[in-house]
Amino acid sequence: MSTPLLDRASALPAEAVSPLVDLVVSLADNKHALGLRFAEWCSSGPTIEAGVAATAMAQDELGHARVLYGILEDLPGAPRRSDREWAAEDARTVALVAESFPSWPHAIVANVLLDRALTFVLQSAADSRYLPLQQRTRKVIEEEKFHAVHGHGWLRQLAAEGPSLRSRLVGIIRAGWADTLCWFGPGEGGALVPLVRAGILHEAGEAVRQRFLRDVGPLFSEAGLAIPLEPAANGWALKEPLPWTNWDETNRRVWMDDAPSGAQRPGRPLLGVRAADRAQSPAVCPFCGSGNTELISLFGSTSLTSRYHCRECRSAFEQVKWGSLGEP
Image (cartoon, rainbow, N blue to C red; front, side):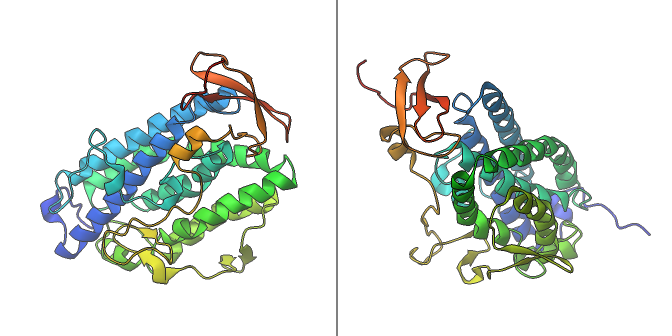
């Protein structure tokens, strides 16, 4: 006998409502933040094709957030959320997307790590008993297939540039590593266990984490990236323990050790440069991440961008004029 579907919020088990609200809010907030971060590279990517891809992914992520926010409208106790009334200070996002990506490798790592992690969580809801969640996740999962191809391809390409850029990629990955792997929850899922018990999620915790590691583990190994991960009999084994003592189940993120206590901890970004600092700093090469660059022309392919040359990898690139560049 098949298990009946839950077609409305009032049919949800009481113990599943609060964790479902927390999960959907965090999923949607991270999707929205990813969309905003990808959008910042629409005309700043290392190639025209990269900019087009960033534009498409930004539109996808913002659309995914809008779809997921729609689930909250019927859930009791859900906070008010809308892609048109989004406030970063209230968002339940991981540190990886807390600030603008200072280089193209940061955008690619976010694509490979966070974007893929969220997709694996959504895959566990593809056959959810809760019909509003099931109906919304299937299209999102289909669109994410193209994001995976993009992220994997670019990571291999960047890693092939040489040891310097591979080292930089490892640093960026490690900065977002704990947040990403903890996102699936501890053990059997932590706060997500009631959702598994109710059939709203197929699985959570270590089971989903292993599916994710089977996706990125071979990729990192092939690219020659020294990530604390190794093959094991039942999948992939972590060489370093995850910081569960700093894990916040409600906001679904890891807080730094020096973050103040309390429910409203702002935390500290784990990587990157603040957007305000980026506007005042030299242009960062999207290919190798070096700041050893020089301005070639105040105008690039459009009046919105300037053209630069990287002295380290000798690549030419364009960047949006974030702030005043001074008089020519």
